[in-house]
Image 1 (cartoon, rainbow, N blue to C red):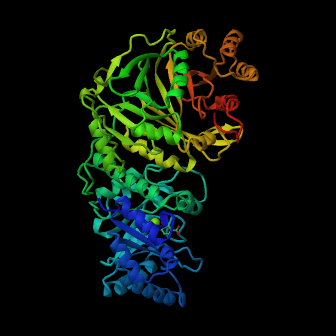
Image 2: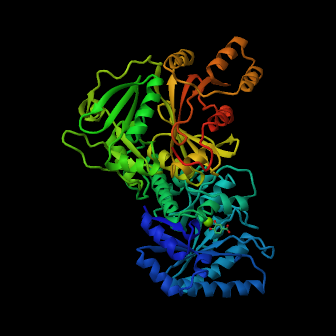
Length: 629
Ligand SMILES: O=C(O)c1ccc(O)c(O)c1
Ligand SMILES: [Mg+2]
């Protein structure tokens, strides 16, 4: 697949951008004129720099306000074009983008525009150059790719072609199957961008909110399928105007961009098996059957505090690693691993982040294939030396410094607990609390990393994202979005913290990065769970009594039920699918906590309750500025 990205998509100066683009694996780069103009080196030097990075200039752009100009503006426009042709020769590229005219001076008319392009085509051909025409969604006379195509068709000149840009077509909901009948040799390049659905002015939306294919809400895959159906096999080029990306980390954004294109190509290949797009072959997205384990890294001292908390929640120590300081606590199908090794990745993670749930394992169809797919998508496989008799568990680095392991039934991996661990006979006597599985893993991430995490998970795992919602913390807003599968066997919630005063923001600041902030366990009977926890000495997070008056009023609940909720500090929510009951632990360490939930048909996450439990959890934070310990 020929991958390319426009320099405008990234932050930094031209050289920084090129370096990041090359490193991420792209073959081509669109030089955005302003990035060149703001850079000090000559066009020839820039052309050489691009090639030294192993890149090809896929496009030079944009050339504005060309077609339909009345004289004397028309003559000026052609002079201007000749100057840019000179520049292109020096840069070493043969393709320029002309975007549809937005000037109030422009005169409409398809034939007039076609006549202008005929002349431009003649001039370009003399130099061996090509011109592609793109309909801007807000163009003055041409704002639809079908009209731009009609002009290109009438010009019928080998140096004049069409440029398709998914944003302009999809933002105006233009029928995409109109693309399928365009001859592929007339499509000079295809630009791709997604965007979140927001009701706003097209130009503003385009210039500030575009994002990578798969990160937004537009049907970019269907658009690309229509392109692929023409037989087009040229560049797929990202052109992402996004305020956050412009200020972000160029390397990270470039990696996201590359991943988004490869993932898009994979989806197109699966939907259009005859496509000529040379897409890398890779295993399908992994079907996640469940969370096999969550692993904590801790010091020995903190591990014993964690152990006390786990035991009070009804876990039993069931297994001890044969050679390492790693123990397993189990309840129902939940495996919590506590690693206090002094060497290796867990220990390194502890030193940076403190006690944290730094890794989790997912049960999939084929663990090795999942890591292979991750690798093709640009993720970094994780390997660590294994001792005699130990299994090599396929794993990758996640986005925020954590690890994701994969287990399956195909290999010995599902027997890891028997192979690498020996049973612990006396794991402490507790009253089991009826926790049966991990309902969700909640990761707190930096707001500006949210799209990265979403794309990372949805491109690798057979799961989808839910719409973003706002969670109100007394100290600010936290954006929350979920990655989940239909079966409910994978639920990852991502909370994006914008400021460091929120509970989520504090967690990131205190633990030096994004990570798992809470784990939610599922029970089939929250009231008997609550009772067992109390008997084990567990103290649930106290919820304000005012909350219960409101719950009663809002849902018209039975007074006795409300009394039970209140006495056990259980939060309640209900929607058209069913009911949700939630119970929290106080925070542990740097703001980590556990949640226990019972779903009665409900599919959400209790967002309406978030403000109440956050207010309660905040009371357990160390006052700002006090040293740890
Ligand atoms: O926002 C713009 O002006 C603009 C310029 C060039 C493009 O290719 C485009 O899609 C938009
Ligand atoms: Mg464009």
